[in-house]
Length: 302
Ligand SMILES: C[S@@+](CC[C@H](N)C(=O)[O-])C[C@H]1O[C@@H](n2cnc3c(N)ncnc32)[C@H](O)[C@@H]1O
Image 1: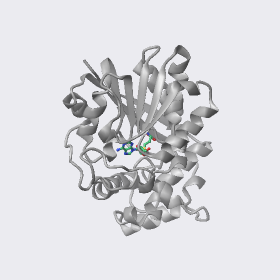
Image 2 (image 1 turned 180 degrees about the vertical axis):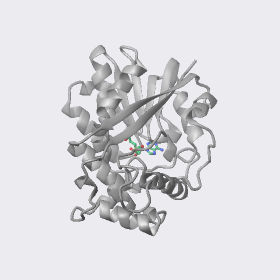
Image 3 (image 1 turned 90 degrees about the vertical axis):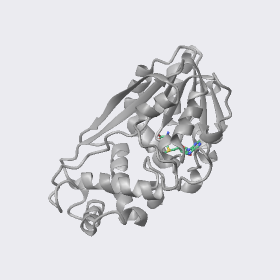
Image 4 (image 1 turned 120 degrees about the horizontal axis):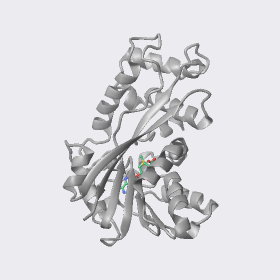
């Protein structure tokens, strides 16, 4: 169970081979609605600021590509449905569509949401359908990222925005020197992450050796910009924050495919940090400080 969670702590396993656009990385590849839902709760305050910044037109029409467990969909609905806005939740995974629907139907404005299961690589929407398309941490999983972004851009109305939550400075919560091994464990995990991701997830996909701003411009969008919102938390942490940080470490010891990218010494340290009975269990420390950048890249259709 826990190893399954790992596979998607924002970075699912899977193998980006397949269709010309995105090959599916849905349920069968290990995305897990519970951990995605926990992530949605973790970022909710940050996301509310991001939605304000995106300034969606009153009465607007929004599509979320790769809606996952639906927490962001709910925030979109809260923001625009009272003024008549409409939200389309799109995901290739039936499990994710069901999780999103279940969440939305618990709240007000369920009638403002429609659901569509499908592949970003073969979008079922007319050109000019949306004022905003939002896609968080989905495009980087696809085997042809640029083709996917071009497809999403093609569904925008003139003046509509494509907003991607993608690559930013990664999560940090440990001190630089935790007293075990060499200082800089989280930096080494970042390096291991890149090596694991490019071998296990992106292998076989079309490489896109440019930044997200370039991709949006290459998709024909203008006024390309980006803004970073900060997630920051100190103890006492909420259960949501502890769950997130715990998964963030455990995935390195519970998944052999990831563990292979660690030095043996670091693998042992991560076992200590994630074992509640250990004197080195991370959550016995009083000095954790959770911070993460949430960057949103935006381009506008002409
Ligand atoms: C890492 S999750 C991100 C979920 C959510 N947006 C978030 O930020 O937590 C990626 C999501 O994209 C969906 N997905 C992956 N490939 C897809 C594709 N080719 N077409 C549509 N959805 C896809 C997955 O089912 C999953 O729900």
